[in-house]
Image 1 (cartoon, rainbow, N blue to C red):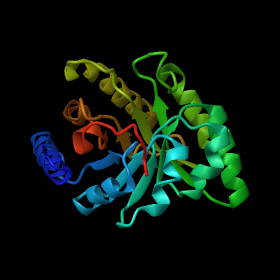
Image 2: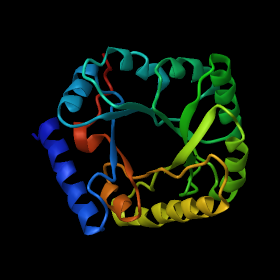
Image 3: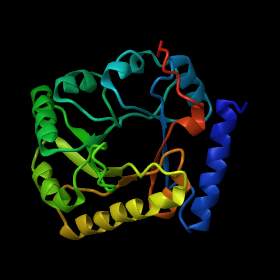
Image 4: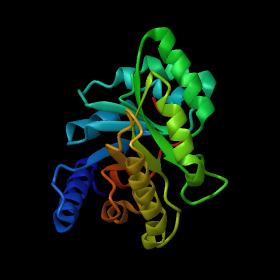
Length: 236
């Protein structure tokens, strides 16, 4: 069985090779290790072996893990659907990036909570590029109008976009949805919305991350390929 260290080494070799083949700088990538269901000891092991960003998708799980990580790291990313009643608990964890803003309502609620604390927060707008009803995310057709509205909220800093590709046995099937996000990114840049940056394009998971790199991703969210099958028995 491959160790976490071996898995990380292999992923970094593959991604560097892919970036070079695309004519992109070797460091034009952030790998977010998705640590949901994995205990703190496993997270620490990943951080000791070259991971510097971690992602959780449930606030209730994150609050029992993030404060207890013992190895220094660069940033905690929240990548799951955010409920308004979980915002204050999430903010206690000081996320570097909330990647999953999927409605004007949740953006407004987050902005209100941040304002009370005199804080600002970097965010990504999550797009539902596959049009699957089981996935959260803004309809791409509504994205530009919504981004204009969210950009007016003083405590939120839009730093890019996030999407989840279509789950398929053939990773190539995810390409059109990643391409759709990239084209939307270009349209948003053309709008020149004040204070809005397209710094991060977060797309690509364990099954399709090399395809995502080919379509412009500079942020991958990788779980199973680093840690193996998830442990649903507990997180302590």
